[in-house]
Image (tube, rainbow, N blue to C red; front, top):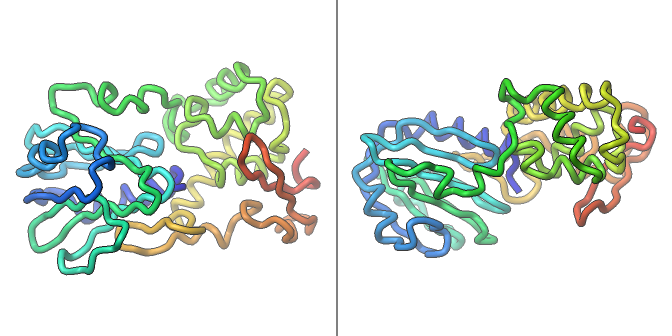
Length: 278
């Protein structure tokens, strides 16, 4: 599933390629991909004639501000979604769900193998959170000023779950997922099974720093591709080759040489080094 670095990589690419170009039309190939409005014809009609002023990211959501006064285009990639900037003559991938046409024979394609991804058009006179209700449940973004040690400590004090499970909750940290939760816990020296109430203040401080560091490192190399993720130009992310523990079960730790272990927590795989993490 694309996490914060992958979504941020897509956002940066979209801002480089799609701004201030008029949307001339569209084609919805899978109706349930459009979460709002409920009519796909209305979805396309309200986008037509607008242009993308800027792309923003909130957690794992993408938001495009539309001009002039055309509202917002929202996207959530979910597990396998891809936004690809292509020439209209490119052959259609069999998992193409939505096409948005621009000038100069360019288009933005939403490709989604598992079909969990969603798109929204939000009218200009309506709150984005009212239509994209998941936004209202998001915690602070790790790069936001309010994501302080005190903020994270307060969020974690409310939970009695293992720290790894808590970190996957988007109401605790927005945008963090399985890959970077494992990586941040390794860098902060915390076992994924540690109960939130057992965390010491200095551990929470290290964890906050580690979350930001691993996210920045992944964004710098275009995110992680283990299965489906591609940037808007169809290029893989490169963080996977640099990962400390994620997807490295049975391999030696890059720090101490101890074998990386994998366990299941809350139905999700967790990777860790029992020597570097306590």
